[in-house]
Amino acid sequence: MKSVSRFIAFGVVLCLLALSVDAAEKAADEKIEFSLSPIAGYDPTYSGFLGVALFTKKAEKLKTSLQFIYTLRKVYRIEPGFTYNLGPVYSIEGAYEFSNGFEPYYGINNSNTVEEKRDVFGYFVSAKTGIRRKHSKEASTFLYLPTLAWSPEHSRNSDDSLKQLLPAQGYVGLGVANIYDKVVRRPGISSGWRVEHKLEYLQSETVAVRSSIGLKYFLPLFRKLGFAFQTIGGLSSGANTFFQNYSLGGTDRLRGYLKNRFIGAQFLLQQTEFRFPIFIENVSAVAFVDAGEVFNSGEVPFMKYTYGGGVRYALPPDHIEVLRIDAGFAPDQWGVFFDFGQSF
Figure 1 (cartoon, rainbow, N blue to C red):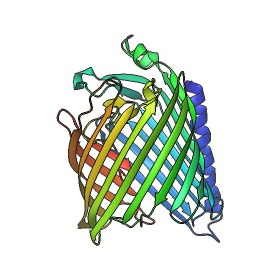
Figure 2 (figure 1 turned 180 degrees about the vertical axis):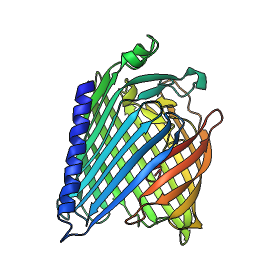
Figure 3 (figure 1 turned 30 degrees about the vertical axis):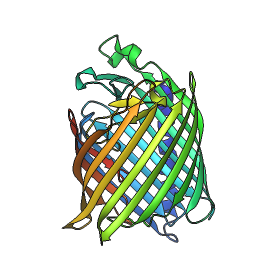
């Protein structure tokens, strides 16, 4: 698993770099836009980190992204991605992640304590590659192949009992997402709404079928000031393995709780952000409240709440993609979260 993961990661990175180089060679007659950003910060799960992110854009034909992060806990993460437009109707898209890190494990439940956390080291690979068809300016369908593989690295796990928490597992599957997008994207605060329904078939030791639906709504009030809302929920059948379930906690969902804090077969989540400028060029700020819960059969759902704030640095060339830093607070955890892109 270790050598296969590295081979796949190396191959995908080479392909994306080749696409970027090809774009650069054609820059004489087609405008190529690049954004290279250093990354440095602190993640409450993986400690301090350094890294770099590269974004390229060739007109509306090709977009690529490549992020590399290395932490003080000797964990690396590589996240390549691309969008290639075949024409006005079809495009090919891919998003990937490779890491040699660890997964925080609190259990598969919605009720645990901070003291129950165990760090299980291993190799993680995920991929989502698919083709998108635009039915109109607003409506599209994305058909994709989700795959995931996890293999524990027992030499780095200090306790033999950790071997049983997250044994080798993974899945291959088929997914379809139907999207209706009326969002007008602008720097600072967008406007409009977006609804997306996803249906996934995941084949592992058992078969899991997952369905989720989410609504995003953006309400500008004045220039770069306004509100952003997201309501999303999902349910699954047959989700018996750790990675087939839904997760709350971490950089995007229920910020304040840390990664993998709550794992379950069903989930609900509502997020509200107030986004506003702070009179520094390309920098804005947010205040947020998240409310959500996961639950399994036999568990009673009680909504959990987190709150916090953060800053956004708008990246060139269009200043819509952002570098995000959030501080989130929960009743028994808190953290500072760094990532690219808005949380929703």
